[in-house]
Image 1 (cartoon, rainbow over the protein chains, first blue to last red):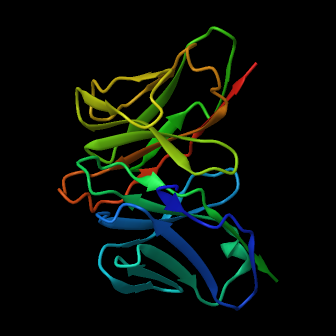
Image 2: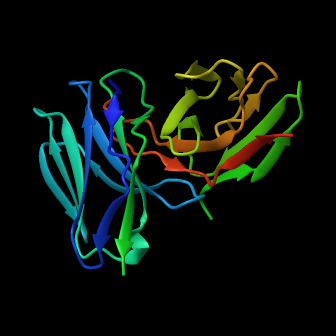
Length: 112
Length: 116
């Protein structure tokens, strides 16, 4: 079992729809969770961070965390073609190490 | 401008050659990290440093070496012992002062390394 798992996709949604991206993690003690967006050939860019159970909203993005079920999700409302990218889920495990463990990413395609 | 600068953007390595990738930051961040990304894959941790003159191995350190002599700089050397070095190398930083690690990492633009 991978430490951080994501469906590789591609996830295809029409413009204006809600895109739902999911991520599960194996370390029950994980504390911090991040979503990064990565355009093809570019470096990852931080979109959202979430540390507590529940929802966190920032503009068109909502991160959802459920520690009991060990999953974190990202909702993108009113999806735009410019949202087409790979979305990486990253988790800080419950160790002294501050480095993150990344999933392999979900590729999102927003169809105009 | 504050930021993380990686150079060069593209690098080619000959057989048996060591190459060094540069990462410089002026964000005054304590922690710095090196990741490797292969096509269609997530990021894998090579080395990280939480303070000057100290660094730790990540998950795939074999064939790589680092130094952290200055807060601003964390160069990565890909040695000839790394048999499959072709990848996208990403340097990241974080403030690193929160004991829970609640400081997200920010990335440089990356270096693409290929074998000649």
